[in-house]
Length: 439
View 1: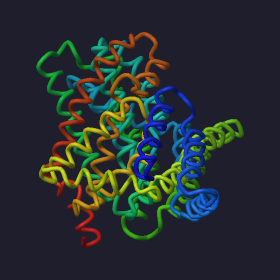
View 2: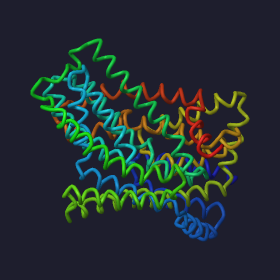
View 3: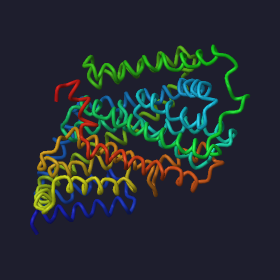
């Protein structure tokens, strides 16, 4: 059997193992070693060592645990609650004010944290009871909270973009710049949709009752300044320093994590249990991502050495279809993979397989990375996995899971529209990197 076809069997075995439910990282390593040994002998063990050392030398990946830690600490600082309360007071007389308040809060907070589980959970805890009390529609409320909470996976400093940069071989800083406008675009689509439905049908989002409104202008100003000014400092430390070339992603992540600790301490919430829990969650998430990164790197090296990646790329490039159609096909595959798989598996396992095809099409890799990021955001809102639904259900038990799914479906359609806009108008993603870095 030729090595190329052995690689196809390797790919089929991986997909079978994933869908059966085996742990992905161990499946990757075991399959890589077994098929690598069959394909080219004991050299596979040397390959595994060199690939692991090479991955661990990637300095950018050190930003992953720092950004995750920053997000978990900020979750405990209470900034999101203060920011949401200020928007709640400011917008109280407006129909659908809570929808708009949730989305504005989620968008601003997404620029300070690159994780989504914490965002959806906190948004659900603080907004769901208020929405239920105000008589807001359960489906639309669930969709707004879930969609807003997932913006953190796209809007910088996104952990997904930090991991994606080395995989694609592009600058994480340029990926950050490219993702800002698509992230704001998606947020705007969500706001327009939620507010339009509220104005068409006031029962979906009535104005807040008088007892839920602020008693004075100073109360509004105090909540808003207390929420936005400290968060603005963190955003500049973590994101502004990267975009303006003042720090590398790893340095900015360290600044952001330190700033989050200082801020939480000033609010009197930086206790030993809080630090311990944030560190524990950081260890869990970053260990999963980085171990998967090493395993997928070994698997990818074996897959490439067998020649299967080149064979697949040549076969796809030989199809009698225009480049945009081929790109659309790749986006369709990634969209479908997002249903059963989470983003680390797709970015670390399947992107390296698709990369030779994209390079053969002479496509801008920053644009491609942004497309993938927008595409993968739909994974959190698309059944049957849709992790955002389970995060929200855990903190809003009064909402049925079917209501949450139904509400998220509308926003998944909006995400597809946003993906189409970035796909057909590449400058949506490439304009800001061009302005900042002269691309």
